[in-house]
Image (cartoon, rainbow, N blue to C red):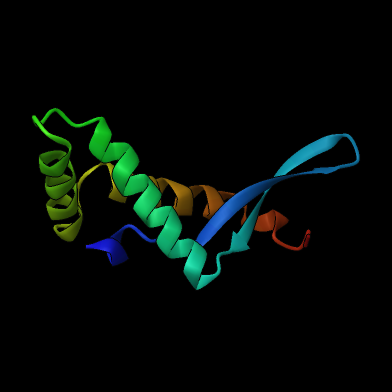
Length: 92
């Protein structure tokens, strides 16, 4: 379910001098949930089932099995954070 979609870190853009860095940030619990739900709905809409209810149901079932687009989004988000871990000393 939702816990498989909730990200723990996200990257935010920050300009330092002339360069823009993608800086990994911890996410507050309430934001984790809202991001997860937002992604669920976003990727449910892109599915090919008939009704929104079916699309959302299918995406929720997929996420429970650790698959589906919303889970992939979380994995990609974590990968980006991992790749940019060197910049995490730039705090906001």
